[in-house]
Image 1: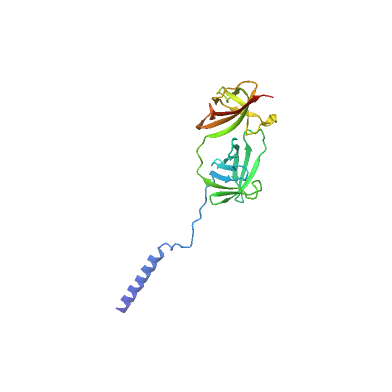
Image 2: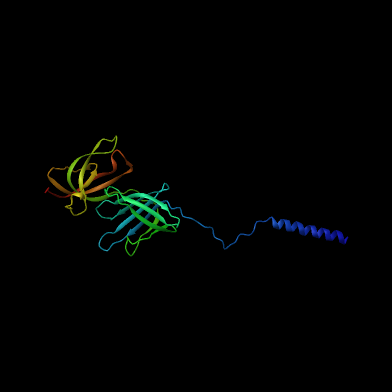
Length: 235
C-alpha cells in the first residue's frame, strides 16, 4: 500500500512540474516597450522678434525623402520656399539639403537636426542663441494673405507647357522699393480689380488667395486688389 501511495505522489509531482513548465514567463513590470516616432510629417516653430512680427518656420518631410521648408516673416511679403531632400545618417541625425525656390541661386543649404521625441532640434548657429526647435503638428490649411506689391510693368508670360500664356507683372514685395534691378521678379496671374497704366510704378495692397487644391492651369493663387497705396511716374 505504501508503495502505491509513493508512486501516486511522485506522478502527481511530475505532472505538476510539466504544467508549470508550459506556462509563459511572467512579464517584467519594469520593462518598457521601445517606441520610435515616424520622421515624415509637418513640423513648425514660431520665432518672435523684438522689432518685427517674427518668423513662422514650417518643415514638411515626405516618405519619399522630399523636404520643403517655408519661412514666413509674418509681414506683407511672401514666404521664402526651399525644397530639397532629407536623409537619416548613421549617427541617427537628420540631414536636410535645400535650395531656395525662384531665387535663381543654386546654392544649397545643409541643415543638421537631432530627433527629440516629436521634435527636431537644429544643430547649428544659423538661428541665433535661442536656436530652432521644430515640433510635429498637423499641417495648416492654405490661408489668404495680404501682400504689399510694387508693380512697374504688365505683360504676358508662358504658364508652362500646354497651358499657353497668362498675364504677369514685374514686381517687388515689401514697404520699400529697391533700386537693384535684380530685385524685380514675376508675379504670375492677373491682379483682379487692378488696371495698369504704362509709365507708372504702383504700390498695391493685394489679397493672395490660395487655390485649394492648386491648379496648374492658373497657378497656386488668385490675386485681388485691396488698395492702391501709391502711384508715381516711373524713373
